[in-house]
Length: 266
Image 1 (cartoon, helix red, strand yellow):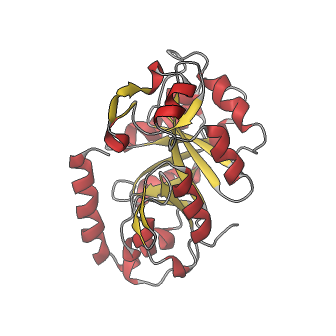
Image 2: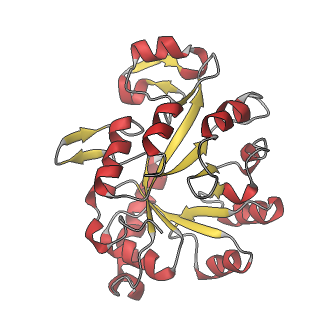
């Protein structure tokens, strides 16, 4: 999320605490999704996003799901990392994932996991929300390379595919469209239109931008809905009370997980 969007999200998390739904105790549990895993500063120290440690911490906390980002290496291996290069997290901006073979990446930055490692850890224990960041039109091997790693999992039950660009998901022809989640930023109306036209199964976006009318429209069309990014317990209450299917958070280590949100495995 860009800095400007992050500031707007933080402001919305403050302002929406005044909502009556935020002040009402949550009537039922929703499914909490840790954005890039449970990362940040916790009781055991700093945990880096999109690492096996971050996903393992989700399991320890009883969190239902984790969002993760997939990139392909030069030799077509799917690895879990948000950025196209390794500068922000590992001080190696010279390492561009698409230009680096997996063996070289593993030797240089061993903390970046292969998708196989995450699937093996998560299978049957942690729902995976896998964000597709590249277009299959440019990386023609992308759908096959990712799909073959997910064969042991069941779409919708074990994983969903997400993208900010709905067309990025259209190349995954072996995966049912019900398992596709179109992610909105400030373009909620456009994403909803594309979602309905393409027949994808769900929409996710800012809790502040998916209003009651949009939520009802998607419900009437049989779509699932996820909202984020929730930063405090009151907004978590609000989203649970609104009946969304998933609540995404970049701040799960600061949320009151004893509300029953984390433990809901239904």
